[in-house]
Length: 362
Image (cartoon, rainbow, N blue to C red; front, side, top):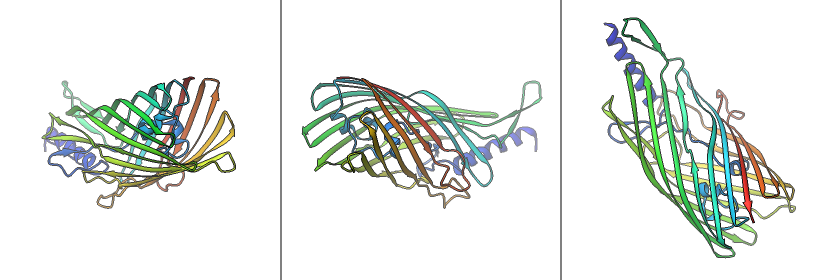
């Protein structure tokens, strides 16, 4: 077997591994997979375990339930959030380092409240942004001088989203909201003798309602399905990035001892593709008021997976979260830390840190 045949065989094996061993699978014809490693934007939301569909008064509500925008603390609000992430998927045969590093702008949002109980907002976020560095799989290609050049395969998955939202208080106890966002997904595979790249864009819609019943808050939000699919010129296939139709159901308790609020939430994602991610996920946590201007948060959420049809794959995760919010006059600072390693055996990585700075004009 000559060298070029060996190279082609190695590339084919690599694509097979990346498409079947650790990727999201699709039942569509001639599709490539898209790895499922979302960012976890929303510092104040994730400091209490991501249970935020019944929350109000924060700009990140536009990512969880747009109805929460109906009760903003001031006439104008602005928020900028940065994020850091470190991810590693552990397989029986090799480790896959998935690194996003530091994101200067993970989320940015603003809202204007022309009258009490009615708000308009806009936001920017990065739902997905990472690289897959397969350090233990090395391919070799011939250079123009017939010398051997080793290459470490890399994959990139990036998304950006720009959206607008609106919310209104129909009554003091009932809020409605909706949003529409434009997303662009981009993928890139860089391996020896084979380079593929593609991108696509689409719209996603969200509707939400929040009801206040005797100091309890109940929230329901629904999001439409979003899909980005692009042909890959180097192979007779395409990749599909699916964000499925989803519904979130959540609640927040009245203040316990006038200081502690607890939240719980469940999420159902209706994947069209046959993916190794379970459809039901769960979130829960709480916020403890140490003073009128300082709150501490704690919580946990699941990232349940099912790789039973695979040779091996990442196990399900339970993330533990913590964080705090401090208000300084018209400014507020929120930070959250998420760790998916502490309760998982044979797993390393999956850590997130979010830091947000907000400003409100009364």
